[in-house]
Length: 151
Image 1 (cartoon, one colour):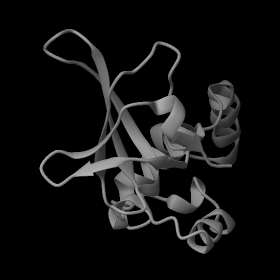
Image 2: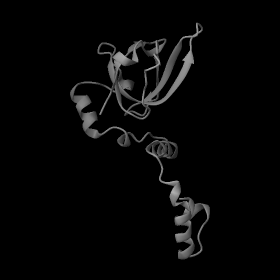
Image 3: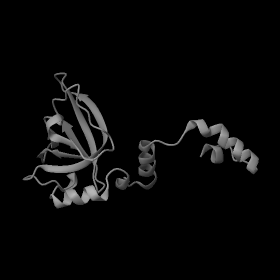
Image 4: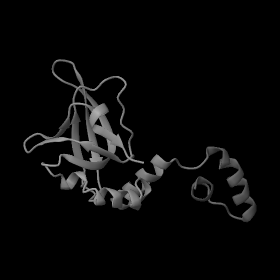
């Protein structure tokens, strides 16, 4: 893009020179493409992250997206967009995971008791067993036991 937009070539020879000059910069990463499309349209490009087959399988198994959470089932799927590390007043680490689903609703999940080996991949689909409180929102006490990365 820089070879065309940044230094607009006047002829074909200059275009080829610009392409050769900026070739080592490489292409955009998948994360950058997802962020660009989200910023541009205001809608998360869910088709780049989770396949339609996976969504259909989740529907067949009656696993709703997080914005349609069923308190009796306590199971849902979502895509983490951001993981924010925080500490309690006693100095214990916890995470606030900002997640989105097929309804394009952003939801926060508080993850208590985070261990050093725990991890959550951003822009990857997850299924999880969560607790919900109308005043507090979504939470979980164990990422390792309750979060499952979907293929």
